[in-house]
Image (tube, one colour):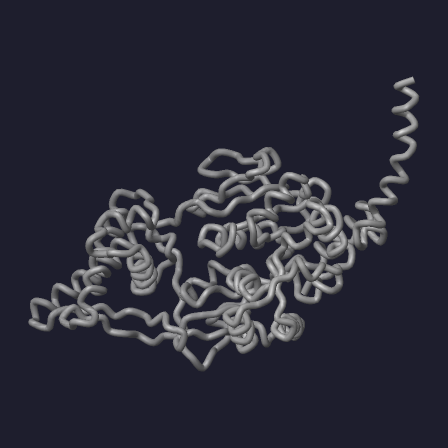
Amino acid sequence: MADKGKKKRRRQDPDSDEEESQQLPFKNILKSDSQILQIIKGFSSTSKPSSSKTLTLADLGLDSKCREVTELSLPDVQSAIESIALKATRSILAGNGFSFEVPSRSAANQLYVPELDRIVLKDKIIIRPYANVSTVRKTAITTRILQLIHQLCAKNIHVTKRDLFYTDVKLFQDQTQSDSVLDDVSCIIGCTRSSLNVVAAEKGVVVGRIIFSDNGDMIDCTKMGIGGKAIPPNIDRVGDMQSDALFILLVEKDAAYMRLAEDRFYNRFPCIIVTAKGQPDVATRLFLRKMKMELKLPVLALVDSDPYGLKILSVYGCGSKNMSYDSANLTTPDIKWLGIRPSDLDKYKIPEQCRLPMTEQDIKTGKDLLEEDFVKKNPAWVEELTLMVKTKQKAEIQALSTFGFQYLSEVYLPLKLQQKDWL
């Protein structure tokens, strides 16, 4: 009797599935996974870049002279630091004291290049003299950082930015000061920050359909559990990337990443899921670019529907003003904005109680973004951002959980892929 009862309950399952699809908005219009996969495959094949040469600053012949750094070997970095020290010594012996010529990283010295779709650094130089009350401390910090970098090169070891700070806490006082001067040193030498053997602590994680070598060990990211694999802070350790994924899903928040990882979204729709858990760090930006360039996969971004979500997306795509000197290595071209977009709030009938009012600072940030050239270049972005500022409403990715904790992976993302609803 018990078995018969079980059989009867199983017969009722199709009805419960139909009931569920009526409760979940838009689930009833979802096509089968195989049909959606065909749509994604079509997009992936058309998104592959042509074999034509990638544009560089040198190809454009811009009116403004711009500055870019390159990857340098340890002996070259050592040699550059020794040349700087020798120049300072000669200046001191000549009775002129010493100073550093530092490329300015101020907002006025930045330039957005639409042909490259990234921010670059112009060539303005500021003089940082030791014999000046306003700059003496920063000059001392610069000298100390140069000394420490020279030691790292000589020993061929890597340290974190935190390690660097703790070598002279009394001088640096705050890690933001040593971090800022570290970027200055990259500009002075003309090398990428990774060339200095100073890395940030591990922050970003990746999971899904990718295998790569990390310092000689092969890592299969489908077998790394829900937490995924921490992105190595030193990109030089990463190689031999292999993947059968159809796209890369870039996720802003750790919570959304965990939901997709636990639901094994990457098995249902072959993809690679990556997050920096908020603000993009250098290692995640380098890793994302490496995946995009080597695997030649489209990148779709899932961020919060607020001005900061769009800023995070722009850092991955166009670069940050703070590190514009290295934008050629840190930016990932042609990232598509998948969601959550301001227009999605009404389209997906997200309840009012799940939306948040924008603060005055949010509105100001949104209006400032509308003035940025990289936003103006994309009319669809302007339309979405204008709608956000007009309605004064924002929402996090987790707002979709109002329809169920798995709505993101079960309905929202599959429907976005089905409709090719990205900008």
